[in-house]
Each structure stands twice: as C-alpha cells, then as structure tokens.
Image (tube, rainbow, N blue to C red):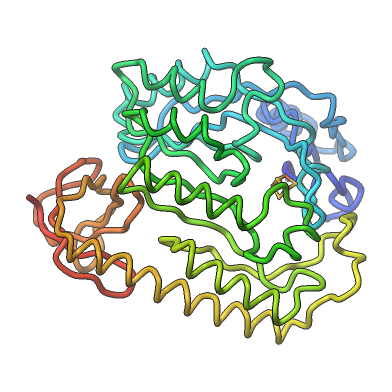
Length: 360
Ligand code: SF4
C-alpha cells in the first residue's frame, strides 16, 4: 500500500506502522508515486520506504489535469498557507504558499475548455493567497488574465478567506465576464471574540461591509460560507452573535461543522473546550437558521422570476439538476439529455433548498 496526504506528512512514523504500508510520501512527491509503485511490484520483499520531505522547502508540484467531465473541472492553482489559525493543522502538512505559474494556469484552463469542460473551479489550500510567492501577481490579476482569453469558460473560485475582498478586488471582480457571481467566503464564526481566538485576520464588521459592497457592485451575487461551532471558549452569547451574523449576511448556504481538536495546534490546548452535546445543539440551531434563510432567498428568486443561467450536471429522480452561475441548485423536468449544457431557466417554485424551473 502507498500512502500520501496530510496525515502521512505530519505522522509518517505512525503510518509506516500500519500493516501493509510499503511507501509513504506525505503531501510532496506525488509525481513519483507511479514509479514507486512499479518499483515495489518488482521487489515485493522490500522494507517500507519513507519518502516524506520537508514540505516547507518544496516548490509547487506541477500536477495538471488533462481530462475532466464536461460539466465542472477543478484546477489547483495554489498549495500551502502562511496563516496560523489556532485550530488548523494544515500549514504543518502543506507548508508555505506556493502558486502555479499564471501561464500554466491559462494553458490548463484552455485545455480543459477545449476538452468540453463548461466551468472551471480554481482551488487551493488558501486560494486567496495566490501569488504571495510570485511577486506582483495576485488572484485578481490571474482572473483578469483568464478573462481576456476567448476560450475561458465559467470560472468559479474555491473557498476564500474574507480578507481578500477589499475595495480594489471588488471593483475589478465586478468587471469580469468569466468569473461567476458567487463567492465562498470562509467565515468560520460570526462572533468577533471567537474570530480573535481563532486568529482570523478579519472581523464581522469588515466581512459585512465587503458583502454589502459586493452586492452593490454585482446585483445577483450569492455567498456561501463555512461556520464552525464549539470553538474553545465559545459562549452562549458568542454563538447568538454567530446566529445574528448569519441572519444579516444572508448566505445562500452554510457548511456547518463542529470544532474538533487537532493535535499540535494552539486551540487543542486552550481552556474552555465545549462539550459535544452543546456543539450538537448549536449545529442543529445554525443548520435550521441557514435553511430558513436559504428558502427565503430562493423564494425571492422565484418571485422576481428572472431567467437564470444553469449548467446541468446530473439527472435526478425529479429531473435534470444543475447550478446557476450564482450557485443556486436547480431542478428542471426534461426528457432531453442536458448533461454539460448551459441553458436559461425560468424559476417557478422552491422546495427543500432546491429551485424548480422550466427551460426558457
Ligand atoms: S484555516 Fe485556512 S487560512 Fe487558517 S491556517 Fe488553515 S488553511 Fe490557513
């Protein structure tokens, strides 16, 4: 068995002890995995090999996607993170920020578009930090480069830290034709006390101001986020602030998750660890709130009645499912094969977080 990834990077000795493990390479050296597998097949009696390297000294590993589905393809543009959020073990496993060269990103996106992919999601460990290691090229510069090319499909950004969204970013982002009007801003909490404890680099007032400015600049923009409950020291009052923040921010969707201790992180040893029963109760309340807000947003889209641009992905039991550019999930009953098609849909109803509509 060959093992790679974050746990293998941070705990290679533990992984080597697992029965059947023959090779461990962590988060670097993945390009050599096939070669290592062939070597192991040739010498079946070999001792387990630890090929884990110091990830803080590794350059960006130039892995590219050659073929992808007609619908949505993912291009990794960045690895590593220079932040030190107190709950997160990722920087230990992924090292510092390393970015894919802009020319490589442009080539990869063009190849995927030529292969039929209708949407490309740019991802990374800390995508907002793209270019930190490149000098003068930042994420917005890369988006503008993509926007200038005729062959660029819909571009969606993976999870972003809210501090990226500053006035200059908003002005330039609003002018792009290929970037979709949807941002996933990873808030983590709606309480300033908790954000300070997490060592996040923004507060709720900054985030709300950014959302307002983006809504003014891009009227149909939608936002999604991640919110963690039960961070050490999160009081009932802090959690109520997160609920209030959620109501004001009006996210289309929220990924709600409970804090879990990661060995080696600052938060793992903090006082005020929150009991699991409290985390469960807070998760349930936050999920109920975000579902209510989602239904309100979808109902307003139905009332407005404006046609939506939908990329269809799969066939469900009630019809073809896809997402609008602003990431609203849509279902359309149709006998046609809509897989990979982008079509205009008139919204007619909403149920259980899905918008139902008909082809225009
Ligand atoms: S949570 Fe995100 S920004 Fe913070 S350290 Fe982890 S990867 Fe970096």
